[in-house]
Length: 475
Image (cartoon, rainbow, N blue to C red; front, side, top):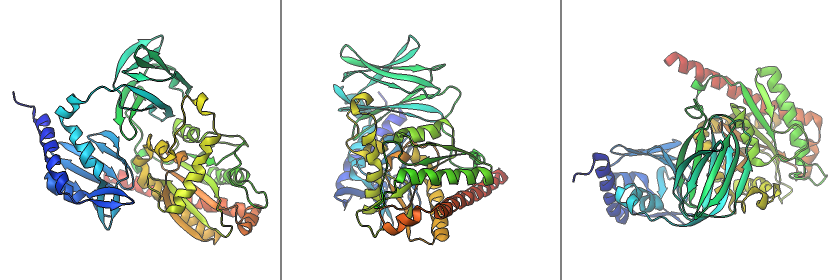
């Protein structure tokens, strides 16, 4: 019997991979084995578009397309997201991919390999929920891969059966205007996820990720086709969410003179908001407008629900060395720019330890916070715009404030991970530096900071409008 053309090409690809792996030299970076993407493509007789200065790269073989993002572990294979065990990198002008892409991902494309995959009993490690403008995402992190099927609708809830999945019952109130609650319970040897909706149930789109095994269930809102593109064709900038870091029982960093980060950044945030609303005619929403605690994921979920066009998170830095000074601006990446960036992200991510106890969340909490960022990689779709916003804001701050420029950096900030729009995190100075703390206490200096951030947003808006007009003229 003849195999269909697509199945045949997949089987041939898997066979080619088995020979290619042995011949492709390994490049070791930070203890991880990598292979050269161009060399791999040549051995597979595939086409590759991977320029050293680009953010994205593509590998094409027959009808199949694999899309890579610089410094991200997530790849997209024929439209389906997968997560590798290490980020894709550019080193010495060459795109390199983790060797696991060759040994574990490509062979899975073979129909024979898929059919032979055994069903393995698994336990639930964690359940996570995030709201987006066009869908609500439920992620089930498990000890081993699980399969699922729709069990239909019962008592107004869409039911998804998870075969062989064991674990305690879980429940989460979502109330995002689309999904009311998500509940996970046992059903014999399986588990059943019951998702109740405010109105009409949405279409389910599922994908499986690895390392660790995760089942990603996206419940799409009716009459929606997906998130808005992060391009000028999306329309003018209308809404910005400005996020004041920390708050409530989380003071953030505290200076030697007692200045608390939560108070400083809330004051600066309010000043920025007033400038933007008064001078740019853009609606500004604050993730918090008082001294109260907001969980990290709720900050970007709020921005998603409000369909914000930009998300700007304002923080103050801290360091064990009191001489550290300057400003820096971050956008999200699974790979930190440097050790200092990794330390800053770890410090900001530690806020999750102050959130609700693990038992009430229905899980033990992520042991690796970077992994918690990777489960919901919406930001990879907005990487270019986020980097542009970070550049103009950082440039504006260093020029206006005449303060050391620590640069634009990338790191795995949990608070940015779920934003379905361009998003940046600004560190406006070190409260742990006595000299900077003294300046940060001054109302005049806070005004200068606010004006600098406002000027950066205004400049980004100007460039955005120019590109939008150019896009319209090209049509």
